[in-house]
Image 1 (cartoon, rainbow, N blue to C red):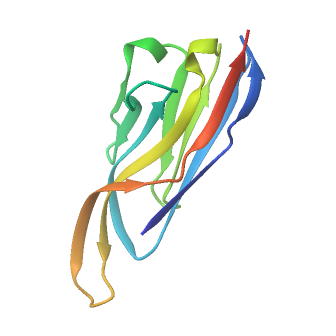
Image 2 (cartoon, rainbow, N blue to C red; image 1 turned 120 degrees about the vertical axis):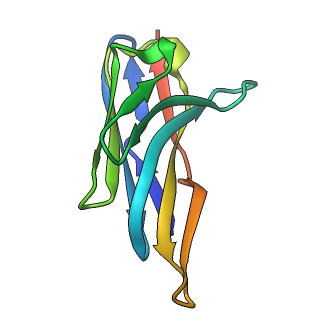
Length: 124
C-alpha cells in the first residue's frame, strides 16, 4: 500500500491551498485518514483526521480554517486549507490506517501508512 500526497506550494498569508492524498494497492478499507505536519525544529503533529464514517477531528490551531474530506470509493482524501498563516508552514504528510491484502493473499492492517510529504510555505 502506498500513499501519495500532493498540492503543496507557496501561498501568501490569508490564501488557500488544497492538499490531496491518493492511496494505492490492494486496499480493502481505509479506517482512518489523517494529515500531519512538521515544521523545522518541531515535532510532527496531527492536523486533522477523518474516519470511515466521516467523523472528523481537528487540531485547535486549524479549526474553522481547514476542512478534511475523503472519497471512500476512490481511496483518496483531501485537506482544504483557508486563511493560511505563516505558522501553517510545514511539510504536510498524509497518513492512513489501512486494511489490505498482502502478496500472500492474507488480510493485514497497517495503521502507519505514510505519504511522502508535501511542502506548504505561507509567506507573510
